[in-house]
Image 1 (cartoon, one colour):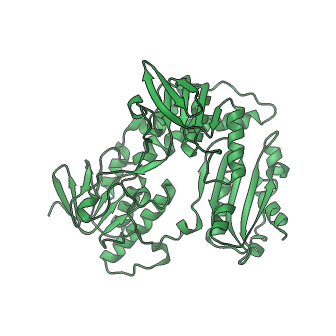
Image 2: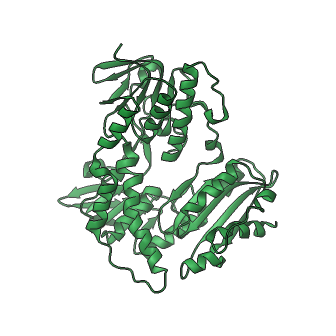
Length: 460
């Protein structure tokens, strides 16, 4: 019975780790399998290292906007050393010890489903009494552009793990990774950075004003953005990459970074349980597969929201649900069902300016047929904002459900707005009526006074 467990978790990233933690708290025996590093993509190649690289850029922007202070040149080796510290020099020893201490059984290897309640790890077949949880994350997508794969492009992994910053960089894409890493690497030495964007704006899922602010800031710092352009062919000759563009021009660089979205990892054995390979696993609000009562999927694997914090949220309720069902306890408590995804997950884009958004954009709300009204406010007129920075540029927008008089979405764009987001998340998730929100008094002089101004603009 050594290879029989109550729960088997495929993937020990931050999402899988949270399933393990909650299931063990519920009294279950758990095996967790990871082919790479415990802590996963977020800890070593995405959220954590990217923010370590972006923080000096953010601080430099703050200093630039503070009279009486002078921006010193960025010490690139020191920044990269700090990044290495943040990722524990790419060692998962601490996180592996934590998993084992819960206790759980941590197995290094590549996991594949091998039929009902079974997982194969290099020929060793584990059996789950109650549940198998797929928490295998996603991979950087490489578009089928002729020559691109052969040119050995960078993905987020090479960008966040950079050892020597290239002087010339091509970035394919206009989403979050493209914007963040273009700004970070440009500031760290990629003085010739060119973004190639198929569409006509950045950050297509964000409100338009925020996308425009980010684009303007990138261009002001010297980044070239080619909107409405495609890369049609790529070739690497010696140490150079040449990209042939749809407008007939070419770009030559030292490296090309592909930031064109994510894809669900293939070949995890889904076909052995009758599910399509390389596709998100459809789940209900308890994270249980709609096809099998023993199979669960959390995080990127279910395709609901490809964000670490949303995956961790799903993982907590999933672990609790599995433990409740295994122990024949109530499994329908409010905390055991995913409600957050339907509101629109919160997200911060850590460029300078930052973008912090939660809920629905005005466009998305109207597409759902909702009766909405939007209000915007120029944050430079707020005392706390213009005291914090010279020439402060920021904007806020709120989307209101006119029938229920509650917020549907909020977007902030400006310096250091990330920490303002949770107040908006609470207001939207709790569906706080605007006439109640009016009595949540913001402190003076803080940038959070924008809440008062938005409500005044609305007419309260």
